[in-house]
Length: 281
Picture 1 (cartoon, rainbow, N blue to C red):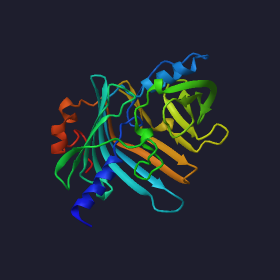
Picture 2 (cartoon, helix red, strand yellow):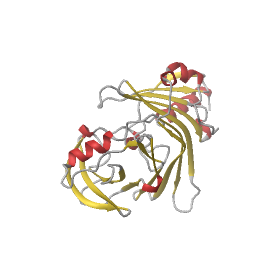
Picture 3 (tube, rainbow, N blue to C red):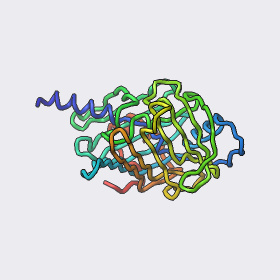
Picture 4 (cartoon, one colour):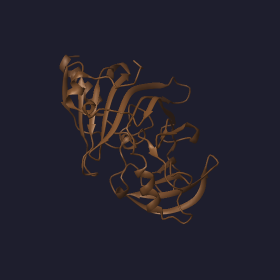
């Protein structure tokens, strides 16, 4: 294979690695909703609570199908809001073909527009601007799609109902929503905790008359609270269509991390700056 062909393949892979951190960004605490709270208001609150704090951490993703060996991925991430927009900086560690790559994402002012995305390619020793991935694409072959990592905006959904229930024994409300954009599903159900408005789980449906094809869980015992934030450090995903099981965990987590604005710049990307406070290599 020629060096040019290898580089092109690498760039395609990188284009599919780009993400924002809706699952990885923290969830701020909130007052319990009223018993008859409006479904859209519950949804607005739950989404808003995911983007209040700067964070850093080491993200591990393992996907398993049957008895096969789990496929592992590892990256260092930092996220910070600047001028009302989410900025994401990441350095990839595993698998080997992405090791040493660095990524910078800057959210658009328009929630319906793609973020600006830049990547440093070690093989070329250059920074390239790349296009965003499709929301239905699998993230590195896992049960997570790129849509799962994107920041969710409540105005992209229409809430259709709310019902009282429980999630792993915790009182919650299930809010049903219909996407009003080109989503990979026709219906989603968000399990929102009564106590603090945290999202404890999400079910996705291809059709309303079928069982959920994907179920994501954020167990309460793995939600770290502090500094005004509540961060899910474990996300469990089961995909019935693919017959796979994925677990995402965050280690070395810091919330409200004191991150310099200069980390989220083109210059930092060229230098592949390490994320302050992370010891994993």
